[in-house]
Length: 228
Image: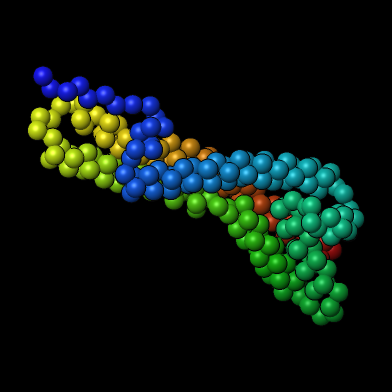
């Protein structure tokens, strides 16, 4: 009678008994998953706060608040101000600086104002988009990393059959099971990262559209003020 092959098929035993390359793949995917979840929650609060601050500033701006008073408020709260408020501060500061200079025509003043707002806009967008590339990388690469661990584990499992006289499913099942865990971990890391990346990219694009619209509207307001 052939001996009965008994194996502990629990998850932790399968991970612990996996080969070193497969364990390294699992560790890499686990770290990638932890980091991606950290950035997912961090970007959630950052984007939510950016939307809230933009809503509040737009409400104040379009209520007809004096621009000089609004500028003083923005300059005094620079470290806690929102992105739209910083764009306003940069543009209005540049506008007032050139307006005080005698002999400067309106076109030059407005060009400088728009460049100042555009530079601040780019910095704010860089800040909002930071770490999104990491989520995109995790989402696109993790399944392939997990697949590498799976292929390596299955390869080792079948190589082990060379020392067995009579191969049964009981001999290969543990090796295949531990190898497939790498694929599952790759998907576990990739799916949330892809969903978060698509969601946050869409929300940031909407914020970018709001900022660009605000810059155009502010330019029109300042140009009318300079002409008057």
